Image (tube, rainbow, N blue to C red):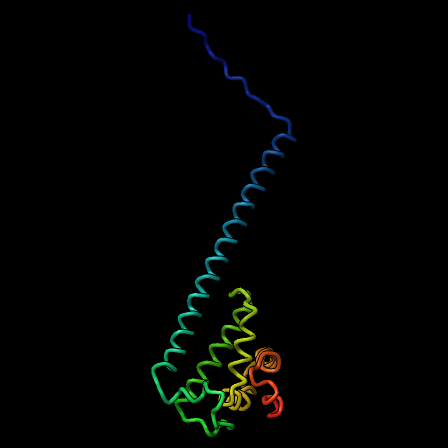
Amino acid sequence: MILNAVAVPVVLPATSVAIAQLIVVVIGASLTIIQITRNVTANRIANLLAVTKNHREIWSMLMDRDELHEIMMTSSKIRKANELSTEQRLFLNFLLLHMAAAFASTRSGLLTRNKSVSTDVGELMSLPAPFAFWSEQKRFHHKPFARFVDRSIKKYGSLSSETAARGG
């Protein structure tokens, strides 16, 4: 025996349709948020890798050139920026530009904050040669970055008492 099936339209109440649409919208929004979060994380990792690569390239200059070693010594006799060689000035300028770019990237959320950076900046920039160069060059940098470097020098500088005496 063969039965003829008759299609009977199913009519859902309006509230059921609205609830179904809401569920679809919520699921779609949730998936979008998850994807955006993953993209932000991936971008931060890519940015960190780029900063690390640039950092390595700059510090490789120091390892490859003996004439740059003096600027990293606490016993350096360099007390004024005009006592730096052209190569030393170039290295310190690359270093400052790198730090300024990393600072701006962190402030804009492109990099994750790292609390130890302030300590590193303070210890490095309080050394006699970098401090002399910074004292000359800070007027060319954005004020928030200059304040960050100055605060780092005062708080974490390995030569903080000597740096303060020099006007840091």
